[in-house]
Amino acid sequence: MKKWISIIITIVLMAGAGYWAYEKYKPQPEAPMEVPPPITFDVTQETMTQTILVKGKSVYTEQADVFAPYASSIKQWHVKNGDQVKKGDILFTLDTSALQTELDQMQSDLEKAKLDVEMNQISIDQAGMTETLGVTEEERKKAFADRESKRLANELNQKALVLKEKEIRKKQDVMSKAVVYAASSGVFQMNEGDSKTRAVTEGQLIGTITNTGKMKFLTIVGEEEMFRLKAGMPVQVRMSAQKDLKFTGTVSKVSKFARKSSDTDLKQASQFDVVIDLKPDARMYGGVSLEGDIETMRKDKVTAVSSLAIMRDQPEPYVLLDKGNGKTEQVNVKTGMESGDKTEIVSGLKPGDVVVIP
Image 1 (spheres, rainbow, N blue to C red):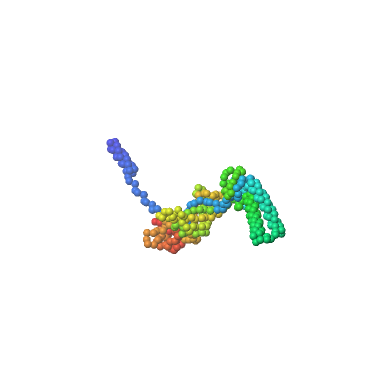
Image 2: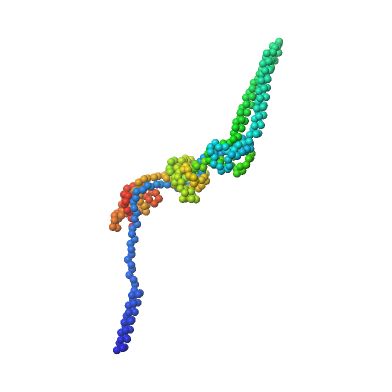
């Protein structure tokens, strides 16, 4: 009896172990695959623009060079390098001592020449009153020749006086320019760092006055872009080094002539200069690398959808319009301008529609 009990217990244990092993290692049924939901895009009404990206540099628009009016030495500086000046401010004064000496000598020579002319005229007048007619024809001819010679000499002396007076006025005009004034408002920058008294020559460049409030953005475009640009187009500008700083400008000039560098290589596409006037901004400096987006086209209240939603594998572009409850309808659309990741829908959809990508 005990033997049978042991056999039964052994059979039960083996059956339990087998069931446990089966449950542990039996193949698990595959989980049902989840179908991903379709990607949807809303049809919206918005403002769309097309732009051209340009790169270049900022330059100052108004710069006035300051020259030395005559050869001398700078007697006194009234401004320092980098000072802000206003139109009419005194920049520096030139030494006039050498010119004054020359002028005094010229005036002395003029007075002496005037006196000589007066004395000669008196001599001519007195000679005419006391002159006796010659007896012979030869004597009369000689007397006439002497009178004419003195008269002509005196006329030449009078003309010489006029020239001397002109030279004096010219010298005085030069001296009047000894005080050099600012021709415009801006920042004065010396051509040389040394601001001490120094000798200058006539016409020498002394410095430059720059109006830091007026700047322009110079850039270059290709042939294709040139035909899309015109004066008056708005531009969104940013610094290449600090793109978070935003500025605005307007296209003021599009050159009708290709750059000369384009003429040397006939295989190279021509390039054209474009000038953009920048709105005054204290954060902007000259000589800075800039980037700009020139707005060539703008449309308001445009029906638009993501370009990804438009299918183009058929003769006409189409979209899958969401009809709800997982149903879609193929709708042909007419497209317009493209901007970024959006495409204008001219017909076929309306704002508020939803399109899907299966």
